[in-house]
Picture (cartoon, rainbow, N blue to C red):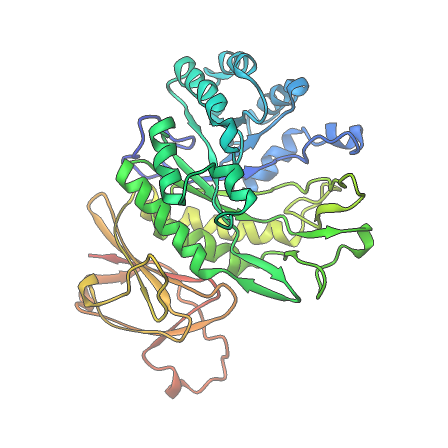
Amino acid sequence: MIISTSSYPSPVAPPTPGAITILAKSPVTPYNRDYPTDKYEAQFTSARFKEIFQCGFNAISIAAEKERDLDIAKTFERAEDSGLKIIICQQDKDEMQMSNLVNKYKDNPLLGGYEMMDEPLFEKLSWLKAIHDKIRELDPKHLVYTNLAVDMTPSSSEWKDHLGDIGTLEEYLDYFQNMFHPVLWSYDFYPVRYYNGRTIVRTSDFYKFLQMFHDKAKKANRPFWTYSLCMPYVEKCYPASACVLGPDKNGRPIPTEGELRWEAFSALAYGAQGIVYWSYSQRYSIKNSNGVYGEYYTSAPIDLQGNKTEIWYRVQTVNSEIKMFNHVFYGCEVIDVRHAGTTYPGTKPFSSTFGFIKTLETEAQGVMVSHLKNGDNDFIVIVNHDPFNFQKIKLEFSDPNSIIGISPVSPKPNPDEDDSETTGYTYLQPGGYLIFKVM
């Protein structure tokens, strides 16, 4: 990986200076009173944290209940030689408890920062503001951030719980900006789900939120992070044997490599400086008071037995690609982002005013096209809109001698296809990308 020397748009240092932050949420299966204690304790080993680094991560976040701060201490101790930075999650801790943690770890070289309560309710914001400001006062060197909820139906109870009486998400972000002055923006939106017997992709909402947070971060001159889901689950099911996706069971399917690549590289092409995976270790599923699982978790990169799954290797592949192009994305300035073939509300359609490109022909799915500047270098990034299918595009540059491709070219999905049908065309793999450097 090439460590970038580009500047980072934040008043505090990033958790991983010189590199895109690739963060694993839940490096161990979170504590649960129904989860065997010996299994839980056995996760805190140097081998576990080195395994996370081998998967391509450079940071982890650790949350612990109020009475289990020893788990945080064990993480710092046993991750010491792993190459990972550690973000401490506030979760439900009050100001005094967080102050004690900050004073204990603020000078530890492994510390990467602090995460406030995930997806906070509106009624909690004033309480969180006091804790947030106290952390910043005690440790002005490390970032403090809050991951925000965005996937809600307007006027729903969930919307009101998170946004109060604020009318739009854009207005809520302005409210949050004025209240917290965040040094980093973060949100989670998982665009792929299984619903009524089929997999659906909420492509329009995916790009809407990317555009929204890119715009907010650029206006505030702050970085932003996005999330990718790598822990599939089935919603509202019982017993466990019946928790299988099907015509009457909705949820989140096992992510494909193309899906993970699409989410990560679309975000990076919009300027994201961090990719967060939820969740590295499979969670123990909990029944509600009616004996039903709200979310029955079926897998993760590491399962409940501590074994690597197929998801682990898919995540590792995508992470290795992110690191390969760190010099393109870390600290980059987004000059322009357009969408060709298919456009979405809130985004800009591709046209000749983008520059550099003479011809761009796509199939129905379309592509996003981004112009990035990093130091003295300009880059063009093209990402397939489709996470599940190959796409054939025709691409001609206005001055081909000034453009050099720096990413691998995908082979034809069908090697037996007649060359006369593909001459002058390039294939994008599912969720795939092309990256060019302007000479």
